[in-house]
Figure 1 (spheres, one colour):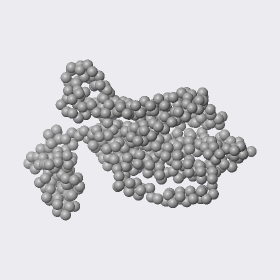
Figure 2 (figure 1 turned 120 degrees about the horizontal axis):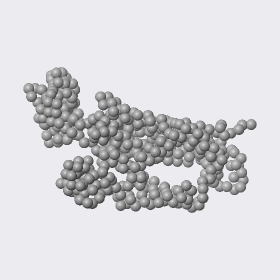
Figure 3 (figure 1 turned 45 degrees about the horizontal axis):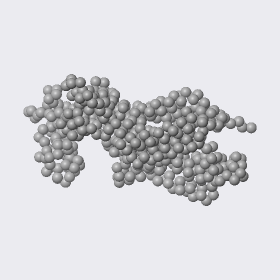
Figure 4 (figure 1 turned 90 degrees about the vertical axis):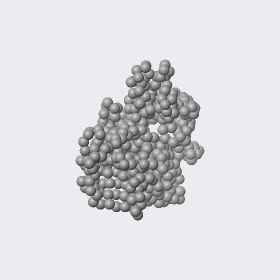
Length: 503
């Protein structure tokens, strides 16, 4: 593909994506820039359109690479492990761009009374559109089952994984029965084992107390909450008898003793083991969310975060590192002192403060991580710029009257680009590690957002459900291994010792 054709495609993509966004059509691939914050999506479209115009204006009929760059590309392709890993990562990124064509709770196609509907490209279609009694968004999984039972020729086509990565966690609750001082499960007909809870009478969605039962008797820890969801009491039982009790509310917990429902309930649906019958390929988590859908949404977050992180870190690093290495003197000394002071700030404390003040979005987290990660790139670019400015070609450019901007951006930085290419995979690994660690510690994305780190923490807290922790663990390991292999191949391909002869 020539540069001009690529520029035309980029401009068309930006224009069509903007039109679809304006008219609220959420077409996969075209809505990729808007998977994060809206203003970031518009900024990306502007950047894509500007890049396309720049490529068109240059008018080149083919790409022009130096012989050294061609050798480096060939060397990268010869490192099979890294090259194959790169292709796999690009394929996975393309799959992530398909979005709700692969994973989502909105139907791809609905045929109702002879009319075709395409909900996956629309915002909300109420249930009344398909003859249902509610005005809220249609539950397409239930609609598919209903059409199947009715047999009137209506049908629904769902994505391969018919569950959304976020805010799609149905729970099935069972009401327990109590007889002769023991609790029984209607499902099994025997004594109940597990966790059961009572809810507030005036607020059924809020738990009042939760117990652990063994052979129908309270045996283990009891937790109690108030209407605001704050823990107010704790107790411990053995074979139905209370042996310990702690009141965290200065006696207010006793006033809540009659506020709970008299019957006990237990959640019997989540988590569930992997099941092809219910399209839960990797099972569900403790909230009922599909693990595969959460991993898919987490991968989308990783792709977006990696792009934003590289743009931010490399932009700051090239700007400051290039100018520090080229100008030197007091500007270089001042910049190094700023880097030393800034690098001494505690990263985790800053994240904790930010998380306590606002609900961090993906863009905010990437911005905070990038704010503490640009110093390394700056140091590498500064060293490269300092080395390149002493070359003969830079002196020749100055003698011909080239401006400072032309010398820096046309000569020095292009010859230092190998450093950025080499650093890119390891920067991607760093941001993946950081996001997963912050989510694991509870300082990352909001709870409703899909996250590998939070899924990993949930799995480590519930080893009785091994499919949760193993899914998150293997997803992280596989992606980080692929990125590391790509980094090693790039480092070997751009190694100057392989293309330099010393005399």
